[in-house]
Image (cartoon, rainbow, N blue to C red; front, side):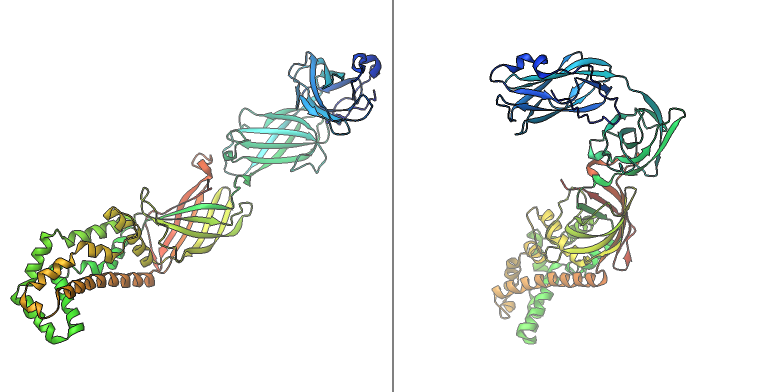
Length: 546
């Protein structure tokens, strides 16, 4: 058979030797049985490898007519091969009959036979001799200025010219791991020049993305048997773990005592129903009187005042509403407390899009999608749906620290408070789905039909307007309260038109190991709503989407 051996690491191995040339007819007489093809392995009859050396053995298959054909071939070791391995034990030849097998020598010297057999029984074989290699010791020092925890180093060495790094393209002559991250460490390498050495480090199996590995490479390394050999490999953080182009971004803003001031201002018209009147009945009757003046004039207005006095309507209505279970002070207090509570903290959930961690400084887009209260309380997606808060933000990234430069989210304070009230607070208080508007809530608390009936008992009041009109006027008064709250919300928007934030987060925890799910946890270092600075505890996080 033709003797041409193709070995993947022949550049560093000893020359293959040909002790004797066999021919296919003498060595494999039974392979020439009628109907069988011929398997021919190229190269010398004996392949000599160093321990752990890898070789590619090629060959061809010819059918009984002497033509190349596509068949299944199986490779095996005969004899004592120790821990030598085959990359594949079965291959399919190409249409022209060519095929190849990759063999890696074991860690112990040995002699065995490499045999290939085709599906029709045709076979060929060569002897394999594994011998100890001539080695030298290399001291490896590591330079790393990053922050990631490193528990061990993995090393790979290949033959190669100075262009081998950062992607090793030569033949592998070494692969191993240290038991810890002590430096410098030593490795044994075959005497070969030049070679390229790649070093990676991590705190867990480097096959897992969450390890946040570090890596480095140096090429043009030479080993000199006459003196001690050493090399310095500078490691850099592997940014490939950040594969996503966008992150889920969550901001947690605690306004502190400012929330009480804001909510009191927003709900001032509601508090007017109970604090700036003797009672809700007095407030409602005053409001209905204003509706009479607007629609019927002062003459009927005077009649209503007379009916209110002679019929003692304030006390009568107060008693009727109390008997019906109305406690306006409790209603206002519950709404006020709940709205303040949902602001401690206020959560803004959204996405940070257009992120490429390979760049130190860049511009991303932050879009707020949902607003919500403390953890455990559902976030509301519809508060900003008509006008989503989208803004560009400058992002810097270095040593696993992310910094969001100061930017303004276009979310008005009044818009947020009113939205939270309708989408989060009122549905929680009333234990039903939202949104629930404030006028809907007030109309559910105050029975305007009862108000009209109580007023219409007084004869003079009957000469002013119909019972149905009184009921509609009561409803208008409550809707006016909700409208005044909307005016207060607009005023808060004007005073606090945008939320200014600046923050930083860390992908590593206090032990310098990566957090779960590639999350980046940190704080908002600056938060203000409009010109008002908020001094509470503010947090931020970035998480890769599932």
